[in-house]
Length: 238
Ligand SMILES: [Ca+2]
Ligand SMILES: [Ca+2]
Image (cartoon, rainbow, N blue to C red; front, top):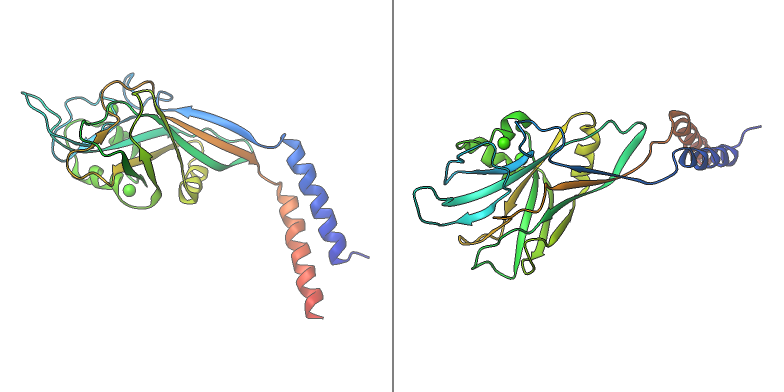
């Protein structure tokens, strides 16, 4: 006779078996040079309402406000974006994700600590990555919406200093929903007080997205767990 406790034991055995099948936790490392949406440029860049981007080939993830001189300058406030092609995960799911970026050049007047906000992007990835001219609606999208986390960073270091931004549960859910498609993140320098920028000048390689994955439990395991829970609740009712 099957009892609730026996169902629970079977479910537990199957869970162990399932996790052993795919050898536990794995890591997938992606970057913005993969699956380019335009020419040979990386799937990253900036949009601004204060200045017009001269070329969609510009992959600089310049973030914050610049006031310069000259015929062409970057005068204005900038938000940045990153797009990654998420592969099919073949029976796995993402449980953690981090965006990795080098510091690049910062403004002379930047504070020792700044706060960066990362956001969801609903703009089509092809439109997002055609970052030439200006586009107020794209600019709004990449700096607002569903938060993927706020990060207090120290701005000291070198152009090669690597930041790791651990994305929150909302981002992880969107990444899992984007397998086989593009996934984008927008950036906004939340603590910018009119003279701060980061990620300027020499950038040491494309931004990366590091995914931690685990095997999905097979449907039969989920079914056994649900049955076990059902038996347990019936037992408590009797
Ligand atoms: Ca572009
Ligand atoms: Ca948004």
